[in-house]
Each structure stands twice: as C-alpha cells, then as structure tokens.
Image 1 (tube, one colour):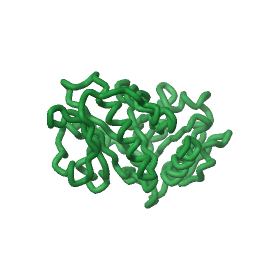
Image 2 (cartoon, helix red, strand yellow):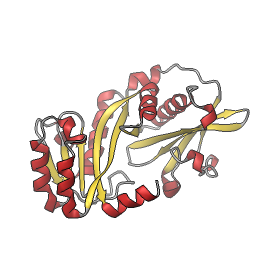
Image 3 (tube, one colour):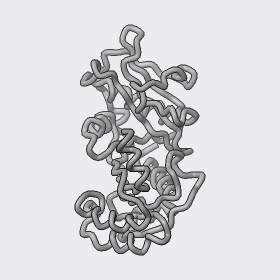
Length: 260
C-alpha cells in the first residue's frame, strides 16, 4: 500500500463523512453539501452535522444543515486563505452564523495519515517489551489511564492494541478503533513516570505496522494545540493529512466545559 493509495482511501472516507465525492477535496474551488446520515461514515460521528469544514490543503469542503449552507458558503468564500477559515479571528463570523442553530465551533482537529516509507523506516529502539494484544487480552484495560488508547463507550470497535511492559507491568498502551471499514484510528497513553522515553512513538509505529498488515489504513487525530500528540504522530511516521472544524450545539459544549 503506497501513499497514493492511502490518500485515495482517506479521500473516499471523507467523502462518505461529508456527503460528497472524493474529488471534491481536490477541486480548485470550495464546495458545500448538505450533511446526511451515512452508514459508511466514521462510526463516532454524530450525523448529520450542523456544520463541518474539511480541508486537505487545496480547498474547503463544508457540510452542514441545509438552512445554513448558503451563509456557510458565503463565509468560506469570503475569508482570504484556506487556513484563516480554520483559526480565529476568521472563525468568529462562522460562530455568528451558527447562533441561528444554537451552536458554536467546538472541535478543531488535525488528522494524520501514515507515510508508508517513514512508517517502515522507523528505527527508534524502546527499552521495554512491546506485545501485540488481541481483543480478549485488553478486555480488562478500560481504565482511566488508558482512556486515549481504548474507548469505554465504544468497546465493540476496539480491535487491536500494543502494550509496553516493564517487568510484566503495563506502562504504555496504543489501541486501534475500527472507526470505518477501511481505516482504523490509533490512540496512545503512557504512564506519567514513563514518558519522554520514546514509548509512545514505538507503540504508535508498531500498531500502525500491524494495521497495515491487516490491509487497513491507520490514522491519527490530535487537537491542533496538543503539541505532544502532534510530535508523537510525526515521530511515529505519520504526516499531516487533513484538518477539520466541527460545530456542536451549545448544550453539548457547555456539558464538555463542565465535564472535561
């Protein structure tokens, strides 16, 4: 599986998520589409979207509620530079549009795709034993310290994990979630006292390789401000793939503020 194939698979998945065609993300102009529920979409998405902006770096694809799309389209076409639609102050006008739907910008995320050559070129050694874990072997690991690697709310999607062990004790864990039919998402945790030793990148890289061996594309997500997570993605052999800005209802955001 080469990088062209990886990109095509990611574009196809984004098209399912956004109710559009894969080539819409490579167009020389922005485009908008009504958001609809789709069984092929990433399984953690709550569709339809109120508003979601996606860019692979060429243009902006917006998907959202039909009644908001004319204003969203004017917004993305009026802000100079793609990147300004994904950061403040360019996002403030979008929030004013979203007020009509009782919503605001909520998530701002970077998504990373594996560089096929870099993934298999990774050579950083890890001082601890790495062990591939199947579903039965991590069934008892749904604990707060592993909340990024495993998702207690979606246990049925967790397919594979790699653990780092120090004298038999688990000190780091990376897990794969079958969030779509062709792509698995990687999350990773390392115990605080074991960080800054290269464990996270070793786990992430090993799990990415294991995912490839199963004929699937691994992907990785980080909030744009999570510098440690972004660094881990790069060290592990991943490269920036696409970015998203997602709006949510006010009550959803308020609940997140109260229960981070």
